[in-house]
Image (cartoon, rainbow, N blue to C red; front, side):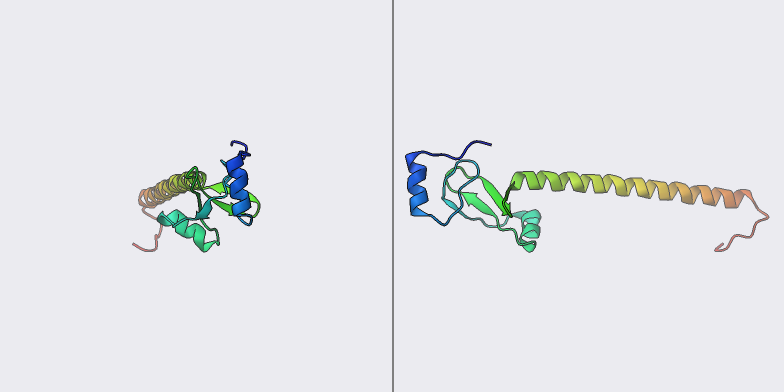
Amino acid sequence: MREPATSPAAAAEAAEHPSRRPCPRCGSRRVYRSHRRGFIEHALALLGLKMRRCHACHLRFTRLGGSVLLVSDIERLLRRLALAALVLAGLALSLAAMFWFSARQASLAAPGLLVLGR
């Protein structure tokens, strides 16, 4: 990440908008609320996170306490978590099917045993 800009233009923006927190990339104070896009940003809004956009460099981000969270990083993380959850669900389903088939084979192999549910 680059250092915030300390140019005369950035100093003029700081004087014009003293209460706004600067952009983490370019240091501009032309940071405004941004419309939510997609499911992920709507879910983040439910958690109280407000999307921001820098009008100077077009960076989309949100703040959580003192930390800056980039929207692209959040989306990448959630996609990886969703993929991991999908893989784990597939493994659990295949293990359940294996146990069911092995239990079924064991009950068919022992004809003298009483099996409930048949």
